[in-house]
Image (cartoon, rainbow over all chains, first blue to last red; front, top):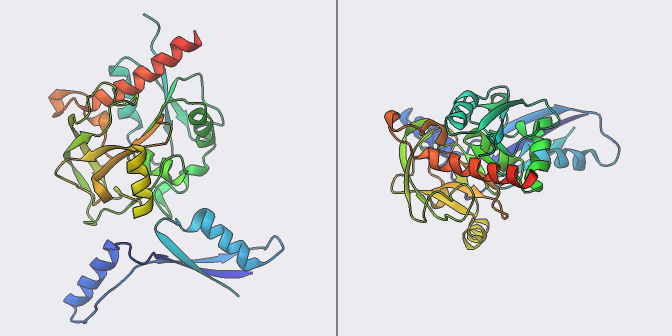
Length: 77
Length: 231
């Protein structure tokens, strides 16, 4: 089974990387008001049984995202 | 005088301050014992130091993978039993990711790697690590990190402030963008301390500052006290 995990900086958390990207896009002449940089993780896995989406969410809260600063979205295909 | 207290310095793939830390502990009268990350038990030691570096390449998030090292399970047992544990830089990041310390370390607000001496303020002097300082003492210790911005949300920060777990703060020059100028925090029990600055690089005034020796000597004193108990 395949899953895609999108990890992003939580709302309200300062994202210096996003700021750098926004500023660089400004140098290229694009009017970008805000940019936030996250991370995409593509997984191929064998579900243990039960709800596979729940299982990936468990992976996120235990390792793939740090709940203090990051939120995540899971898509299971 | 009893024999030198033994302090484990845990070496992860990618650690790069392990030798400096071991040298500094030796110079201050302890016996440093290098422990490989794959070791499932600690040797006979009375203190633990997690050194700086880039454990496991800092993949995913700094410190996130190191928390699964067998040696870290042993460090957790040691800390749970009240043993003194000091995490420096990457060691601090690992302790946060492992849940042994509160908060998390994020990329510096400047996005630049910073490497310079910074002034710190000792916020509490009743911990083993800071027992050689007085409250309000100013220490000059270098930082060298790209991901040193300690972060906790407002609720957690307020809890930690109230519990006195903020041990060290940048004093007038916050090089990382850490919230509330936090440079070092401890656990609720006070036997685990993590800090971004590198005390092991400040043990000889000839190299700019000897202030780091005060914190390392605190760790060594705590380890020596445990030797005395065991004997």
